[in-house]
Length: 162
Image (cartoon, rainbow, N blue to C red; front, side):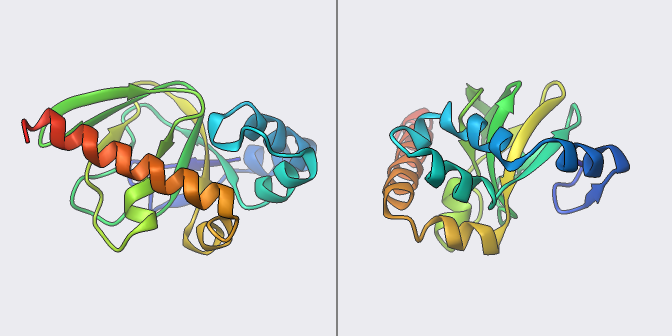
């Protein structure tokens, strides 16, 4: 588990985070993934393999996980807590357990179409570019992320009146 500062590009592992990683086996992250719609229907062995691609983060209140117009540094999957998602200074939705953030910016060579802020402390799983590249090699995940990115873009366009 890592703590992140106000900028999600600045990661700082803590001694508590390192201790939790030792005490919290990969199976704990696999269990968390198994409760998310993105990984529905996966076998336990598949969940453990995918869990190895994610790190767990403690995200402080007020942290911006994604910032509209900037590249997304990682894919976020919310474990505990909620994030407020907005675009063009308009609220779009509130995300919670199992929701993914930063999908479009990681999947396509585009800047983030939306900003996601943690209104309170949350826990999230994060995958950086190298881990994300491994993740999308799995067809089921790639298809689901592509559909999710399309849904998020459509929601944004609908909120803008287009």
